Length: 231
Image (cartoon, rainbow, N blue to C red):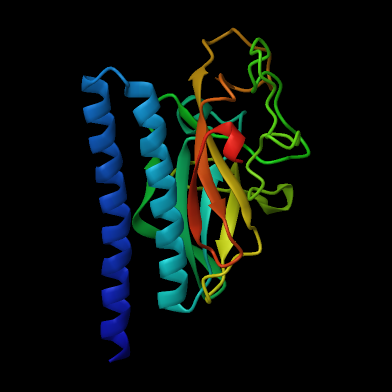
């Protein structure tokens, strides 16, 4: 009976992720036809993020092992122009080793990025300086993904030949997480080659007013949040 339950849970995980990605793509295509492509791409990213969180929590509870979501945060990577703050991967722990989960990875749509946490080191130029509204929440604190912590940044080789920096959110076997907080998405643009100094951010986040994301509880449950004033 145990093997059958494992296979069923695995299938459920795959369905959760695939349905989320397909739904996000559908929103994007429909929104593009109506002239609201960038805004709907942000909605798509929010849906993708919520589905990955749900999938990670489901996988952890079904397998009895920890699961985690990794976000690429290496501005110096050779693939930073496509991966930085856009590439997300789900892994499960087995025998003390983190293993990838088939189909459980995603690139956010072009122009949508994860806002990093309050990291000790933040690359210059990441947040647009010419915006009227500062990158702060309604309470005056920095507008950051507080569920992403400096202590959770690790060096990993994932679908690459070189180690890169990633930040993770980990879910225990009970589906809980010690990283409750916000996960924020913002619109942005990739900087043209040669337009920034070495070590600067390869992308620029553009508008703190136009953000979406999740509020993640200690139970690992995501709640959709729309707009800067709601964080």
